[in-house]
Length: 163
Image (tube, rainbow, N blue to C red):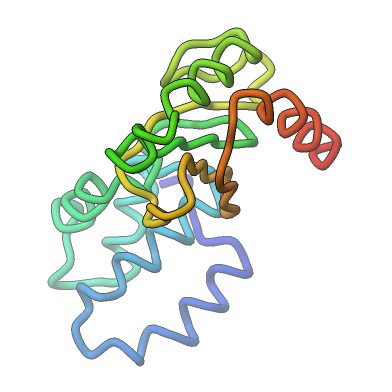
């Protein structure tokens, strides 16, 4: 097994593990640690989580949770994971135009990652900011009231932050 929690994740795991009387409740934060450490959730990491939490948690338990929630990336994503809400409120506000502009500007299709692995663009269902659409979540930050004309400047800002 290749994966192990980073020092930061291990420290947090040790602090929280006794706060959860039901071991199943540890799966979500552990999947978050895995994704933060690796950038995505894979079978090796899920097996580590099952082993680290211990009985009665199995790989099947961890896999079931990871595949249920869309917030866990099952494959590598770019340094900037652009998730654009396509639910009804955002769609009616023009999220499809924002998605098309991201894809056009970056030269990729939805669900793809740029060749330099900097950006991944995906449509997702409801980011919970329905009054502020169109909304994109880029990594852990929300961008509200987006317009297609905002996309180029936002990409340049992110590229500058990533330097």
